[in-house]
Image 1: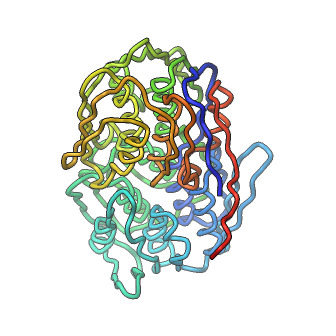
Image 2: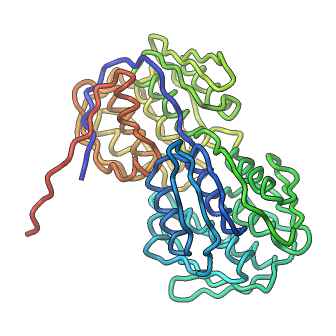
Image 3: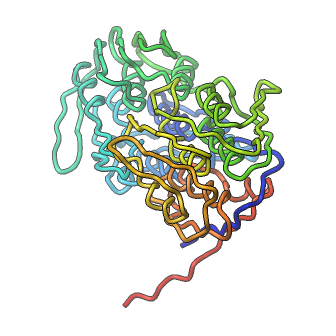
Length: 425
């Protein structure tokens, strides 16, 4: 086991380069199930979630090669297996993204149900109902969903609420379906749009990307493609907020500022100076004092749920009262108890957190409960007086590439240390 040891109170200065987006890389890996041959993916982040997804595809007889320039070659020509085992799916809910492509390509799929999640139930009902509308026969037994269809057919699918993974799963399935599929109230996140553009490079016929209505005209086959994954907007937001927590200034490179408009507006309201100097670069600086602002998470282009915990750190040290409302996931305040250990004054009322800013946080041992909570605790440690130890780093490493190294290069006093394994009783 490992933990981070962070000495707080040191302002940041320097440059941080953003990695490829985890939430774009995973569906793009799934999309390689739709065509036979070798794909070239660029800007693939080196993350545990990505390596888990690669292991899943290897179970389906894929092969991989990483070139010296970092490009990942994905060879799907050996695909024969149609089963995604529980041992891998349980590690990452995004594994369900293989369901739609497998049914579309092979006519059958057997995928373990992902089960519960630390931040909420996140059921896959939308995925299953959409596939049924497209003609798949589904059977749920022994913890697996089995889907069969000689060939999927186009359908009109409406989501009660936008779902990113359901939009991606059904969009991929529709690419090889017979006829036209229309997905209404579709997710508009940049990662969905990026996947759609890659599918079009493979020969798919898709209209309406980035809008609430996506139309897909099915084709008989797709071809391998080369694609560069977009930068990670959640990582970008996390480093913007790191400056809010620690003070100082950063130059954030290899990002897409247009993906961050709602976040940057809230951070400007909170007292950060944010400038876009180049098409892929953001400059951020903290003024002397932070201001309290209310935040409500929303589907894109609103404020993302994946940055709610990090934003709470800033509000915990801002001057007055703020209200942070979480409408996406029902259990995404698990970081609050750990922030209280550092001295934060936060009260939960239903889906809202009432945050009263304190003059400072104080270092203490804390434990991450999920991916974004881990980043939140790192930011809180940067702001705190004294030393904080952050455990549960397997969560952090799922979605942040070398976060400790990037922060250390920008002046943070942070180091990763190994813990001695306890002897069993």
